[in-house]
Length: 53
Image 1 (cartoon, one colour):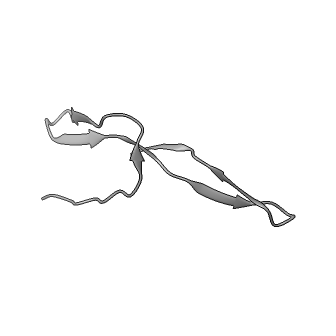
Image 2: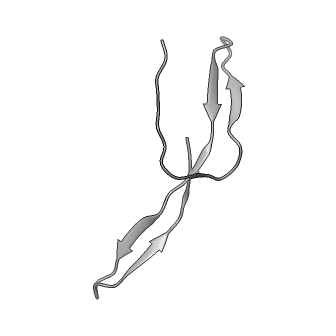
């Protein structure tokens, strides 16, 4: 069984191939995303928190 995942954004660092205790491969990566937030006055700002996937 395989799963296809598509990311739109930038990687924070190179993906890392890891293995479970049962020797099943998986990839760990950090994806950077931009999040737009709006304050009470209506002006906005953009933040870029990293997410570990």
